Length: 225
Figure 1 (cartoon, one colour):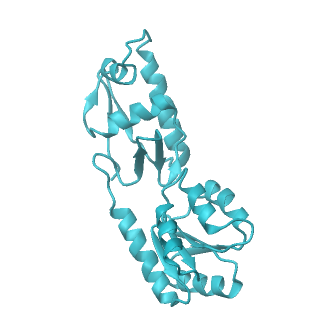
Figure 2 (cartoon, one colour):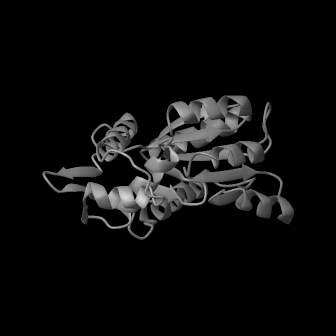
């Protein structure tokens, strides 16, 4: 289970205070002070949740939130002393999951963290497991908050299988779906796409197997347990 909480806060005393409370609550906090350091760390090791201050050196919390939302659905709680309604609305519109205004009680922050993580875990789009998220508009798939970096064809294939978990599809059925123009391709093309999908999924979660082969028939998607 990923219990890592990233605290992005340029006030060292406040960062240490939040870190201590989260540590006592059973989480694994990590602190950053400069906004420029956030994206590289998030891409390298996705945390379970981000506590993100609005005013930061290097890059603002607003810009960071917007950039993270371009590739991940990781929960984000904005933390700021700016209480103007326009800032609050803008923060949430950029994809923040919650908003906490300074001054605050560290216990309240811990409670908000637990609530957001619980809500995030319970969100389960129809036909798709809670750990796998599919953005049909951007052809983007994320697993445990990390971008699978799929091609359009790979996305269509995964989306089609995930929409009907447990149902077995033959290669011809899958080819008809991802190649509606009926172009002439080998039926082994599906095998190649499935192989690439499995490789990308394993690259994020080695113990996870979403797409299963059914000998002599085709493939099916099984939801994570």
